[in-house]
Image 1 (cartoon, rainbow, N blue to C red):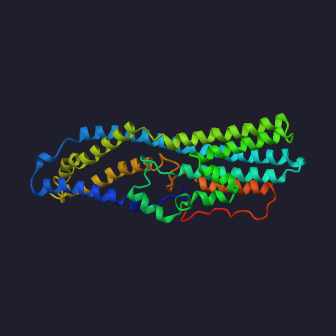
Image 2: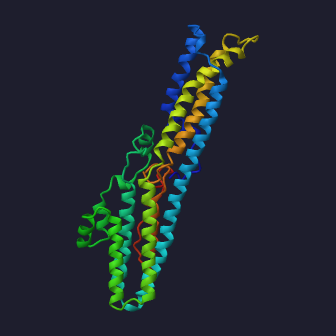
Image 3: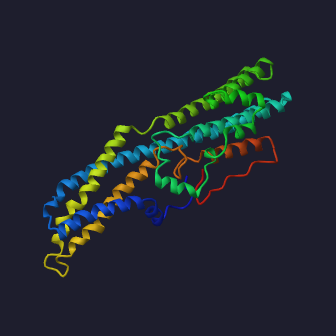
Length: 336
Protein backbone atom coordinates (compact mmCIF):
# COMPACT_ATOMS: atom_id res chain seq x y z
CA UNK A 1 0.00 0.00 0.00
CA UNK A 2 1.03 3.60 -0.48
CA UNK A 3 2.52 4.67 2.84
CA UNK A 4 3.41 8.24 1.89
CA UNK A 5 1.46 11.38 2.66
CA UNK A 6 -0.48 11.34 -0.61
CA UNK A 7 -0.33 10.73 -4.34
CA UNK A 8 0.71 13.90 -6.10
CA UNK A 9 -1.24 15.40 -8.98
CA UNK A 10 1.75 14.70 -11.23
CA UNK A 11 1.65 11.00 -10.25
CA UNK A 12 -2.02 10.86 -11.21
CA UNK A 13 -1.27 12.50 -14.55
CA UNK A 14 1.53 10.02 -15.30
CA UNK A 15 -0.59 7.10 -14.11
CA UNK A 16 -3.53 8.10 -16.34
CA UNK A 17 -1.60 9.56 -19.28
CA UNK A 18 -2.69 6.78 -21.66
CA UNK A 19 -6.30 7.63 -20.85
CA UNK A 20 -5.54 11.33 -21.36
CA UNK A 21 -4.19 10.58 -24.86
CA UNK A 22 -7.41 8.73 -25.69
CA UNK A 23 -9.62 11.45 -24.24
CA UNK A 24 -7.71 14.11 -26.16
CA UNK A 25 -8.27 12.35 -29.46
CA UNK A 26 -11.96 11.89 -28.68
CA UNK A 27 -12.26 15.64 -27.98
CA UNK A 28 -10.24 16.86 -30.98
CA UNK A 29 -12.03 14.88 -33.70
CA UNK A 30 -15.57 16.33 -33.32
CA UNK A 31 -14.22 19.84 -32.64
CA UNK A 32 -12.14 19.89 -35.83
CA UNK A 33 -14.96 18.44 -37.93
CA UNK A 34 -17.42 20.94 -36.47
CA UNK A 35 -15.20 23.98 -37.04
CA UNK A 36 -13.42 23.27 -40.31
CA UNK A 37 -15.81 20.91 -42.09
CA UNK A 38 -18.97 22.61 -40.79
CA UNK A 39 -20.40 19.31 -39.61
CA UNK A 40 -22.83 21.11 -37.32
CA UNK A 41 -25.00 18.00 -37.14
CA UNK A 42 -22.37 16.54 -34.79
CA UNK A 43 -23.61 18.83 -32.04
CA UNK A 44 -26.12 17.19 -29.73
CA UNK A 45 -28.11 18.57 -26.84
CA UNK A 46 -26.19 18.71 -23.57
CA UNK A 47 -29.27 17.69 -21.53
CA UNK A 48 -29.26 13.91 -22.31
CA UNK A 49 -25.47 13.83 -21.92
CA UNK A 50 -25.78 15.46 -18.50
CA UNK A 51 -28.46 12.96 -17.49
CA UNK A 52 -26.18 10.12 -18.58
CA UNK A 53 -23.37 11.71 -16.57
CA UNK A 54 -25.61 11.68 -13.50
CA UNK A 55 -26.28 7.97 -13.94
CA UNK A 56 -22.56 7.31 -14.47
CA UNK A 57 -21.65 9.21 -11.31
CA UNK A 58 -24.07 7.07 -9.30
CA UNK A 59 -22.78 3.75 -10.63
CA UNK A 60 -19.13 4.78 -10.23
CA UNK A 61 -19.85 5.88 -6.66
CA UNK A 62 -21.47 2.52 -5.99
CA UNK A 63 -18.45 0.72 -7.46
CA UNK A 64 -15.98 2.79 -5.44
CA UNK A 65 -17.89 2.20 -2.22
CA UNK A 66 -17.91 -1.54 -2.87
CA UNK A 67 -14.19 -1.49 -3.72
CA UNK A 68 -13.36 0.39 -0.53
CA UNK A 69 -15.46 -2.06 1.48
CA UNK A 70 -13.49 -4.98 0.04
CA UNK A 71 -10.20 -3.22 0.82
CA UNK A 72 -11.21 -2.34 4.37
CA UNK A 73 -12.56 -5.83 5.05
CA UNK A 74 -9.24 -7.29 3.86
CA UNK A 75 -7.38 -5.01 6.27
CA UNK A 76 -9.70 -6.05 9.11
CA UNK A 77 -9.04 -9.70 8.33
CA UNK A 78 -5.30 -9.21 8.66
CA UNK A 79 -5.87 -7.13 11.76
CA UNK A 80 -7.64 -10.17 13.21
CA UNK A 81 -4.71 -12.39 12.22
CA UNK A 82 -2.32 -10.04 14.03
CA UNK A 83 -4.32 -10.16 17.28
CA UNK A 84 -4.98 -13.89 17.11
CA UNK A 85 -1.31 -14.62 16.38
CA UNK A 86 -0.09 -12.67 19.39
CA UNK A 87 -2.63 -14.37 21.67
CA UNK A 88 -1.75 -17.78 20.22
CA UNK A 89 1.97 -17.18 20.73
CA UNK A 90 1.53 -16.15 24.36
CA UNK A 91 -0.66 -19.16 25.11
CA UNK A 92 1.72 -21.64 23.49
CA UNK A 93 4.71 -20.15 25.31
CA UNK A 94 3.03 -19.98 28.71
CA UNK A 95 1.08 -23.28 28.56
CA UNK A 96 4.25 -25.22 27.79
CA UNK A 97 6.68 -23.15 29.86
CA UNK A 98 6.59 -25.50 32.86
CA UNK A 99 6.79 -28.67 30.78
CA UNK A 100 10.31 -28.13 29.44
CA UNK A 101 8.92 -28.09 25.91
CA UNK A 102 10.99 -25.29 24.43
CA UNK A 103 11.63 -27.34 21.28
CA UNK A 104 7.89 -27.84 20.75
CA UNK A 105 7.21 -24.15 21.33
CA UNK A 106 9.78 -23.20 18.72
CA UNK A 107 8.40 -25.74 16.21
CA UNK A 108 4.86 -24.42 16.68
CA UNK A 109 6.04 -20.81 16.34
CA UNK A 110 8.00 -21.55 13.18
CA UNK A 111 5.11 -23.50 11.72
CA UNK A 112 2.92 -20.46 12.31
CA UNK A 113 5.42 -18.30 10.41
CA UNK A 114 5.24 -20.88 7.61
CA UNK A 115 1.43 -20.56 7.63
CA UNK A 116 1.68 -16.78 7.30
CA UNK A 117 4.14 -17.25 4.44
CA UNK A 118 2.03 -19.82 2.59
CA UNK A 119 -1.10 -17.71 3.01
CA UNK A 120 0.46 -14.54 1.60
CA UNK A 121 1.89 -16.46 -1.36
CA UNK A 122 -1.56 -17.91 -2.07
CA UNK A 123 -3.20 -14.51 -1.84
CA UNK A 124 -0.68 -13.02 -4.29
CA UNK A 125 -1.45 -15.60 -6.98
CA UNK A 126 -2.90 -13.86 -10.08
CA UNK A 127 -6.55 -14.09 -11.07
CA UNK A 128 -8.08 -13.40 -14.48
CA UNK A 129 -10.12 -10.43 -13.23
CA UNK A 130 -7.26 -8.65 -11.46
CA UNK A 131 -5.54 -5.53 -12.78
CA UNK A 132 -1.86 -6.34 -12.23
CA UNK A 133 -1.38 -6.74 -16.01
CA UNK A 134 -2.82 -3.31 -16.76
CA UNK A 135 -0.06 -1.22 -18.46
CA UNK A 136 -0.43 1.63 -15.95
CA UNK A 137 -0.03 -0.78 -13.03
CA UNK A 138 2.87 -2.64 -14.61
CA UNK A 139 4.68 0.66 -15.03
CA UNK A 140 4.04 1.79 -11.45
CA UNK A 141 5.03 -1.63 -10.09
CA UNK A 142 8.62 -0.91 -11.12
CA UNK A 143 8.85 1.42 -8.12
CA UNK A 144 8.53 -1.37 -5.55
CA UNK A 145 9.22 -5.05 -5.02
CA UNK A 146 6.62 -7.77 -4.37
CA UNK A 147 8.57 -10.63 -2.83
CA UNK A 148 5.84 -13.22 -3.50
CA UNK A 149 6.24 -12.63 -7.25
CA UNK A 150 10.01 -13.16 -7.29
CA UNK A 151 10.80 -15.49 -4.38
CA UNK A 152 10.09 -19.22 -4.42
CA UNK A 153 7.61 -20.55 -1.90
CA UNK A 154 9.79 -23.59 -1.23
CA UNK A 155 12.76 -21.42 -0.29
CA UNK A 156 10.65 -19.23 1.96
CA UNK A 157 9.06 -22.19 3.77
CA UNK A 158 12.35 -24.07 4.18
CA UNK A 159 13.42 -21.50 6.79
CA UNK A 160 10.62 -22.61 9.10
CA UNK A 161 9.87 -26.28 8.44
CA UNK A 162 11.70 -29.55 8.75
CA UNK A 163 12.54 -31.41 5.54
CA UNK A 164 9.73 -33.92 6.05
CA UNK A 165 7.09 -31.28 6.80
CA UNK A 166 8.27 -29.16 3.87
CA UNK A 167 7.95 -32.09 1.47
CA UNK A 168 4.50 -32.92 2.86
CA UNK A 169 3.20 -29.36 2.66
CA UNK A 170 4.52 -28.74 -0.86
CA UNK A 171 2.60 -31.82 -2.06
CA UNK A 172 -0.70 -30.24 -1.00
CA UNK A 173 -2.89 -27.88 -3.01
CA UNK A 174 -3.86 -25.51 -0.18
CA UNK A 175 -0.62 -25.34 1.75
CA UNK A 176 -1.80 -22.85 4.35
CA UNK A 177 -4.72 -25.10 5.29
CA UNK A 178 -2.49 -28.13 5.73
CA UNK A 179 0.04 -26.19 7.83
CA UNK A 180 -2.69 -25.25 10.28
CA UNK A 181 -3.83 -28.89 10.28
CA UNK A 182 -0.30 -29.87 11.31
CA UNK A 183 -0.52 -27.34 14.12
CA UNK A 184 -3.74 -28.90 15.35
CA UNK A 185 -2.27 -32.39 15.20
CA UNK A 186 0.83 -31.33 17.12
CA UNK A 187 -1.18 -29.59 19.83
CA UNK A 188 -3.47 -32.60 20.23
CA UNK A 189 -0.47 -34.91 20.63
CA UNK A 190 0.86 -32.63 23.37
CA UNK A 191 -2.52 -32.81 25.13
CA UNK A 192 -2.64 -36.59 24.80
CA UNK A 193 0.82 -36.78 26.36
CA UNK A 194 -0.46 -34.78 29.33
CA UNK A 195 1.41 -31.57 28.54
CA UNK A 196 -1.79 -29.55 28.11
CA UNK A 197 -4.96 -29.49 30.17
CA UNK A 198 -8.36 -29.71 28.52
CA UNK A 199 -8.91 -25.97 29.02
CA UNK A 200 -5.52 -25.14 27.51
CA UNK A 201 -6.20 -27.45 24.59
CA UNK A 202 -9.56 -25.78 23.99
CA UNK A 203 -8.06 -22.28 24.03
CA UNK A 204 -5.37 -23.25 21.51
CA UNK A 205 -7.88 -25.00 19.26
CA UNK A 206 -10.06 -21.89 19.38
CA UNK A 207 -7.08 -19.92 18.09
CA UNK A 208 -6.62 -22.39 15.24
CA UNK A 209 -10.31 -22.03 14.41
CA UNK A 210 -9.82 -18.27 14.35
CA UNK A 211 -6.91 -18.62 11.92
CA UNK A 212 -9.00 -20.84 9.65
CA UNK A 213 -11.85 -18.34 9.85
CA UNK A 214 -9.65 -15.41 8.82
CA UNK A 215 -7.97 -17.46 6.10
CA UNK A 216 -11.38 -18.35 4.68
CA UNK A 217 -12.48 -14.71 4.69
CA UNK A 218 -9.30 -13.65 2.87
CA UNK A 219 -9.75 -16.45 0.32
CA UNK A 220 -13.35 -15.35 -0.26
CA UNK A 221 -12.23 -11.83 -1.19
CA UNK A 222 -9.38 -13.21 -3.29
CA UNK A 223 -11.45 -15.74 -5.21
CA UNK A 224 -14.70 -13.81 -5.61
CA UNK A 225 -14.32 -10.69 -7.77
CA UNK A 226 -16.39 -7.55 -7.74
CA UNK A 227 -19.47 -8.83 -9.66
CA UNK A 228 -18.74 -8.76 -13.37
CA UNK A 229 -22.17 -7.46 -14.40
CA UNK A 230 -21.80 -4.40 -12.16
CA UNK A 231 -18.25 -3.83 -13.39
CA UNK A 232 -19.23 -4.28 -17.04
CA UNK A 233 -22.20 -1.91 -17.02
CA UNK A 234 -20.12 0.72 -15.24
CA UNK A 235 -17.46 0.48 -17.95
CA UNK A 236 -19.99 0.56 -20.80
CA UNK A 237 -21.83 3.58 -19.43
CA UNK A 238 -18.59 5.42 -18.66
CA UNK A 239 -17.22 4.85 -22.16
CA UNK A 240 -20.50 6.01 -23.69
CA UNK A 241 -20.47 9.16 -21.56
CA UNK A 242 -16.81 9.87 -22.37
CA UNK A 243 -17.57 9.52 -26.08
CA UNK A 244 -20.63 11.80 -26.02
CA UNK A 245 -19.28 14.65 -23.85
CA UNK A 246 -17.32 16.44 -26.64
CA UNK A 247 -20.38 16.31 -28.92
CA UNK A 248 -22.67 17.63 -26.18
CA UNK A 249 -20.38 20.59 -25.48
CA UNK A 250 -19.83 21.67 -29.12
CA UNK A 251 -22.80 23.99 -29.41
CA UNK A 252 -22.34 25.30 -25.87
CA UNK A 253 -18.78 26.47 -26.47
CA UNK A 254 -19.55 27.70 -29.98
CA UNK A 255 -22.22 30.04 -28.58
CA UNK A 256 -20.00 31.10 -25.71
CA UNK A 257 -18.04 33.57 -27.85
CA UNK A 258 -21.00 35.20 -29.59
CA UNK A 259 -20.65 38.98 -29.47
CA UNK A 260 -17.19 38.85 -27.90
CA UNK A 261 -13.59 38.99 -29.14
CA UNK A 262 -13.39 35.22 -29.16
CA UNK A 263 -16.40 34.76 -31.42
CA UNK A 264 -15.58 31.94 -33.84
CA UNK A 265 -12.72 30.74 -31.65
CA UNK A 266 -14.49 29.78 -28.44
CA UNK A 267 -15.26 26.40 -30.00
CA UNK A 268 -11.66 25.37 -29.24
CA UNK A 269 -12.40 25.57 -25.54
CA UNK A 270 -14.39 22.39 -26.11
CA UNK A 271 -11.17 20.39 -26.23
CA UNK A 272 -9.63 21.21 -22.81
CA UNK A 273 -12.94 21.26 -20.97
CA UNK A 274 -14.12 17.97 -22.50
CA UNK A 275 -10.77 16.38 -21.57
CA UNK A 276 -11.01 17.70 -18.01
CA UNK A 277 -14.59 16.54 -17.49
CA UNK A 278 -14.07 13.06 -18.92
CA UNK A 279 -10.71 12.67 -17.11
CA UNK A 280 -12.39 13.26 -13.75
CA UNK A 281 -14.97 10.53 -14.36
CA UNK A 282 -12.42 8.17 -15.88
CA UNK A 283 -9.96 8.67 -13.00
CA UNK A 284 -12.64 8.05 -10.38
CA UNK A 285 -13.42 4.77 -12.09
CA UNK A 286 -9.83 3.52 -12.24
CA UNK A 287 -9.22 4.57 -8.62
CA UNK A 288 -12.08 2.29 -7.58
CA UNK A 289 -10.87 -0.48 -9.88
CA UNK A 290 -7.36 -0.30 -8.38
CA UNK A 291 -8.76 -1.05 -4.91
CA UNK A 292 -11.21 -3.82 -5.72
CA UNK A 293 -8.64 -6.66 -5.47
CA UNK A 294 -6.78 -5.96 -2.21
CA UNK A 295 -4.35 -8.89 -2.41
CA UNK A 296 -3.07 -8.74 -6.00
CA UNK A 297 0.15 -6.87 -5.18
CA UNK A 298 -0.64 -3.34 -6.34
CA UNK A 299 0.38 -0.09 -4.67
CA UNK A 300 -3.07 0.16 -3.08
CA UNK A 301 -3.20 -3.32 -1.53
CA UNK A 302 -3.24 -4.44 2.08
CA UNK A 303 0.46 -4.81 3.04
CA UNK A 304 0.27 -8.51 3.92
CA UNK A 305 4.03 -9.06 3.54
CA UNK A 306 4.78 -6.31 6.05
CA UNK A 307 2.06 -7.51 8.43
CA UNK A 308 3.39 -11.09 8.31
CA UNK A 309 6.88 -9.84 9.09
CA UNK A 310 5.55 -7.77 12.00
CA UNK A 311 3.82 -10.83 13.46
CA UNK A 312 7.00 -12.87 13.12
CA UNK A 313 9.05 -10.20 14.90
CA UNK A 314 6.52 -9.93 17.74
CA UNK A 315 6.35 -13.69 18.27
CA UNK A 316 10.12 -14.18 18.10
CA UNK A 317 10.42 -11.39 20.64
CA UNK A 318 8.17 -13.40 22.96
CA UNK A 319 10.87 -16.08 22.98
CA UNK A 320 13.53 -13.47 23.75
CA UNK A 321 15.33 -14.19 20.50
CA UNK A 322 18.11 -11.71 19.76
CA UNK A 323 18.45 -12.26 16.02
CA UNK A 324 15.13 -10.80 14.87
CA UNK A 325 14.34 -10.34 11.16
CA UNK A 326 14.56 -6.73 9.96
CA UNK A 327 11.47 -4.56 9.78
CA UNK A 328 10.30 -4.05 6.20
CA UNK A 329 10.54 -0.41 5.15
CA UNK A 330 8.59 1.26 2.32
CA UNK A 331 10.13 1.39 -1.15
CA UNK A 332 9.30 4.72 -2.78
CA UNK A 333 6.45 5.14 -0.24
CA UNK A 334 5.05 1.69 -1.10
CA UNK A 335 4.67 -0.89 1.66
CA UNK A 336 3.91 -4.45 0.63
